[in-house]
Image: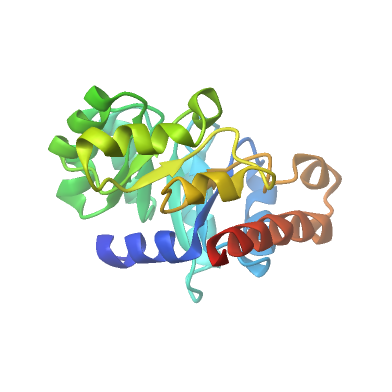
Length: 217
């Protein structure tokens, strides 16, 4: 397992966290490998599916000799966080703010990014010890909400997730995002269903290029 500071640096440097939701266990390793080959360094496997811990462990083993960081998403409670960490998750992401999840991750030395929308949630998450804040769902409030939160709270590291696409990713970085989370915009579910890893790689690479272009402006 990689330490919190290294994981944070990789997440911010890469600029994108790919959310793998609903990928079958037999497909998760080839999909993760294709995503990494496309330039994706942070892979989030959601914990709301079956055998999530086994998927995390399998991808962690597959990419152990690379610069990839593998984490768990949609973590709603402390026991789920604990299970994901035991499986090898290097970071934990939640759609909401649960201080018990944050404290569990801190005890294990694992980066945690709870979901926030309001200043109250953001302060609660930061006081609990969050490393990063996941603004979710980003499509509901748009890029301007990053500045709205940063205004009263100061220097906060926010990863907008939910509705981020190639068309709007530059707007989120311009607004101050340190990275973005993406699901359908970077993970080609139709290609996965067809077993077409070349197309999975191409879709991911296209989004990575959009992120790189946005950050170079």
